[in-house]
Amino acid sequence: MIWIAVILGIVEGLTEFLPISSTGHLIIAGHLLGFTGPAAETFEIVIQLGAILAVVWEYRRHLTTVVAGVLRPSPDPESFGLARNLLIAFLPAAVAGFLLHGVIRDYLFGPISVAWALIVGGFVMLGVEAMQSKTEGGRVGSIMQISWGKALAVGCAQTLALFPGVSRAGATIIGGMLSGLDRRTATEFSFYLAIPTMFAATGYDLLKSWGSLSSDMLAPFAVGFALAFVSALVAVRSFIRFISHHDFRPFAWYRIVFGIVVLGYFLLI
Image (cartoon, rainbow, N blue to C red; front, side):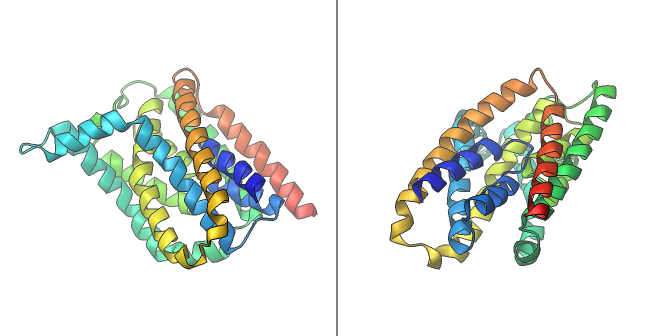
């Protein structure tokens, strides 16, 4: 079980904040490793918490500044605006997830549906990048300058990520670019939005799965959690450096090729 925890922890950390769908990769990896069922679902919840804590750690100084700015007797307008926008962007997926969580878990968590979502999402990403290259000027260049309307647009885009394989990061980044954010700002806002979204989803899932936890799973959970944290920290830092000089086309083609391979494999076995 430890080696499975190592593999899945690294997979979760490396894919959670890239636009390639961590949930999709975990579903596929779990099927290939023969690790499915309630225990696997609980394990995924725990390692997702490790990944999101990596973002909290990476942006801890700015988060502290924002919180302090909001809690002042006279709140700092930019800090208040960011906090407001994160709440606005969080709500659509929170409501949709609460209403549709059971249906999604029962009917959409399979490798075939994930493969199709990866492929379709890759082509959408290529289309948005083509549009981005033609309208590069006049875009919002800071997360502190995002309007509430653009935040709401990103939040609505995030609801698409309830479909496994779409990618929460991919949906929010592409949604941000379509609403007028530049590539880096859309990515950073996606990272910040991941904090309330994933804490809420993880907390909800963990409460529902609490009864399936057992002491013999503590070691694998600890290993997966730690590796998800470390690998997510590496992925976040590397991703920000990458998009400073490149676009998302490599990730789009990866999604398409990987989705086709997965689709072929699971249709033929």
